[in-house]
Structures are given as C-alpha cells and as structure tokens.
Image (cartoon, rainbow, N blue to C red; front, side, top):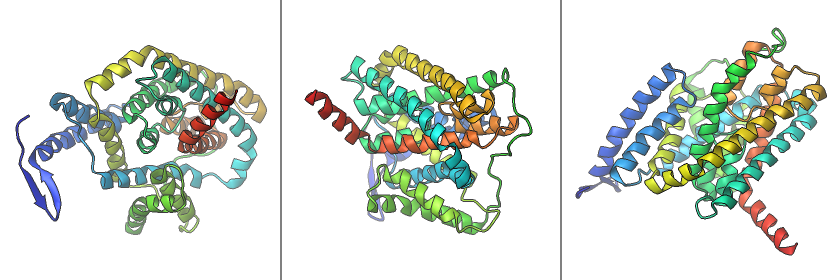
Length: 368
C-alpha cells in the first residue's frame, strides 16, 4: 500500500493512510445508512457500516480499527437503549408474567446454546465455544458483537450470524403476523414518546461515558453495556414525568455505525471463508431457533390466556424494534415487552458469565 506519513497532534499519533481510509468509509457509511433507512432495510445503519468498512478492509488487506474510547461511548449508548424498555413496564406487570417468561426464555436460550455448541464441534478451529454460543443466543443482536469483543470471541462471525438471523426475523415477522388474528384495542402503544431537552442529552452522554467505569467497579460482566444499562434504569426513577433517557437519533446512528465498523473493519478473506464454510449449519441453526420459538408460543398462549399473535411476538428471537411496532399496531398487551425483556436480561447475564459457565461445564464433563 506504500508508505504513509505519521504525525502527532496533542500527543496522539495520526497517520495519513488511516485518515484517508476513514475519510472514505465514514461518508459512504452515512450515505448507505440513509438509503437503507429510506428503503426500510432491517439494521440499516449497522449493515451500511459493515459493508463500507468491510469493503475497505478487504480491498486494502488491513484491519480498520475503531478508536477504543469512541467505541466505549457507543457501547454506552447501546446499553442505554437496551434499558429503555425496562423503564416503561411497571414492576407489577413484569412480576405477573415472570414465571412463564422465565420458563420460555430459558427454553429458547438452551436451544441457542445447544446450536452454538454444535457449530463449535463441527469446526472447532474456526468457531470457539464462546463464538458459537454468542452467535446463536436469541435476541440482543446489537449487544452480541459488543459482548463478543469483551469476552474474546470472534465478533465478526458473531455479528454476521446475528444480523443474518435479524434480517430473516425482520422480513418474516410482518408476513407471518398478517395471517394471525390481532387483539386490536387491547393494550397501549409501547413506543417511547417523550420530550427531549438539552439536559437529557447531557445526561445521556454522562451515562454513556461513566457507565463502563461503574460496571467495572461493580465487577459486572460486559461492563461497557451493563453499567450504562443499570445507570439508565436508576436515573429513570428521578426523571420528571414526560421525559425518558432515549438517546437522540444522532447518538443511535453513532452507536449502530460503530458496531458495524468494528465488525466490518476486521473482515478478511479467511474470516469470510470460515463464515461461508459454516453457512449451511448456521442457517439450519437459525431455522431451528425460529421454529422452536414459534412452538413455545403455543404453551405460552394457554398459560397466560393471551392470543397467539401476542405469544408469537413475545417469543420472537430478535428484531425487538419490529416486534414492538407490530405489537403496538395490533393492539397487543404488555406481555410482549415483558417476555422479551425477561429473555434479554437472561441472555445478558448468561453471555456475561459465558467463559465461567463453559469452564464449569468442561470440568463437570471431565469428572463424568
């Protein structure tokens, strides 16, 4: 690629080669993200960033690394967004649905773990246990690459697999629910609508910046995500009525772009070949997860005396934004968000302690 000139500004080394590459990747990512959003493509900004940074990494044959502090801020925004649904469901509603939600959540999580282990066993050199399991855990697609990065898993493979499932779920959900009877008129709109002020923007920035430090101080797994998540929930109790900590659209775009840049910037021909090698098994695993989630909706429907429409959305493995939009449009009750949130929390806890769990299972297997 030729030599590049390195300069230092305020004690930071900057090379013109990296600046040139980012000077191309950033505007291309923004343009593609805007177009994909206009076309209603699922995970538009993340997909756009993966394409732009991935193309640059493949063309130049070099990784395109994202600044760690910038990525830390972005993961803080992700933690805040993951916490927001927790702030709009009452504690009483969550407790009432908890037994059924926990049962169904762990059934689908267990299948995801099983499929992830099978992926690892099929290609142990290409897919580690952590990578396989994080790739197959249902829900939390935007969180999984960030968790994979912290846990030492292959975040590129995790991202490609998670967003492939997200694409399949997002495209199939609207088509499937058109054939289901909706409980129109039951339940309210689950979308967050609140006033955004300058101090809300400032508070969101502070939480995103200091959340990781809090998480590390508390020895939380995946501190960069769980720290801001906990801070957001706690801060929401003290907000005036009509206000939420929902990040402004620009912060969301930054967060999604950073995820895509981290995943795409590390792409290489060997990593793509490894993903392609696993594609049949990956698609089969995704189909199995989708099928079981649809099956678990039947007992959930009878357990909670709700419609299959609500149960199907509640057990959908991902695409939370699409789920909430369809839920609000069809008049679904709070069970949808309660079950989805219960599973999201369970996934975060399990994913955060994944290395310890894998070691424990390994020791148990050796004793047997």
